[in-house]
Length: 467
Image (tube, rainbow, N blue to C red; front, side):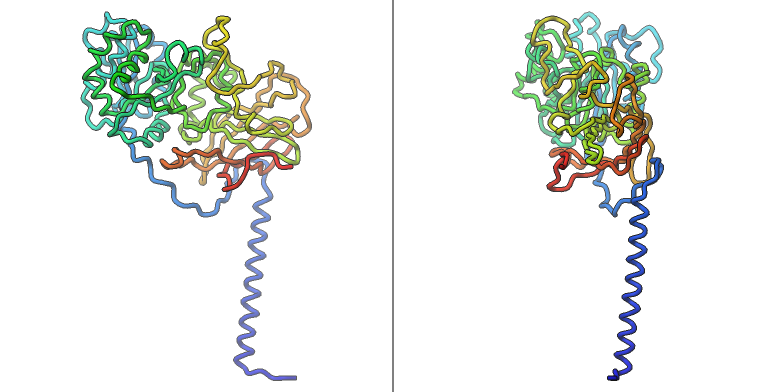
């Protein structure tokens, strides 16, 4: 038998020990991985994440640089004050929201923004009085304002998202930002190129100051126009400024059940909702204001993700799951292609009830909604029940909305609850400019519960049923 030097034997022994140590560490790692895959039946655990880069810095545009001007009247304020408090109370400490009225209300107005009654306006027609708000807001001479935001007393603003949207633009340049109506008929009647005032619109500070200087001389030429938004649009057109469209401003010129519209919201961040009194409560078995308060529980956790639609597939059980974050989850039996799911189901009615064909045309894609809850093409719907903060993100939990004693396949027959985990949506400006829909995975499912994780899609990943 050959002999080896002593130092060679020692080296070989050290290599052997290192290999044994590496093998032990690998075994422990494998056991931890397998243990992690054994998911429990509740959503009370945390999903472990690989180290991620720090979140991007907050938007360079502070919320304090936005001045909100809300048009109201002494007759409508009492009934609409709850909507105003809902979005304005969290930012009331900034003192940048002003409520413009025709006269002081003869009743107390607790927890509302500062009321402004401009002189010599009570006798003006509403359209003319409200159009002058641009000049009235500038005349307040509030220092440090970058953007003037205008809306009605039944406009619901999503203020954090509004900051993100406006941060894309240079506030030192002339910008008029908003969106037209959802109704083809309303756009055809008023203008396709106008920001509808109920959905809200934003004017950069230098443009607002320029408009304020010429507003009175301009408005006299447009007394024949119906609304204040049409008059502001006309005067801005005379200044040579066109509308910069942001689809997240919603006039909501539709009535009834908004489920089909909100469950397939476009990729743009939602900035506003209007005509709250013309729509049904967003959640079943709640009053209108209670349903909005319920929605804002999710908004306050992760405003940038609210209503963002995500779709994933259960290949084993042949299910399609469509999530409108913070609002609803729909489970379809069978595989549904994404282009179909991002079209809005017609759960709502046209704004005008006439027989004019144009009244039933919309400015977005729609698809049929079958009134029979047991129809095979109808999804099983789960509405947001609660929101739970997690060390790594947010859990939103959705419970089944029972609308009939319908036969369903085994995979969804007893499915009562769906829990969705997501990281906080920390968008930077570039991501807002070029949004991309996120993906999701069904991590675990039983007869009664499903657990889903939302994540960023891979570079070449398709949102589609495979196989």
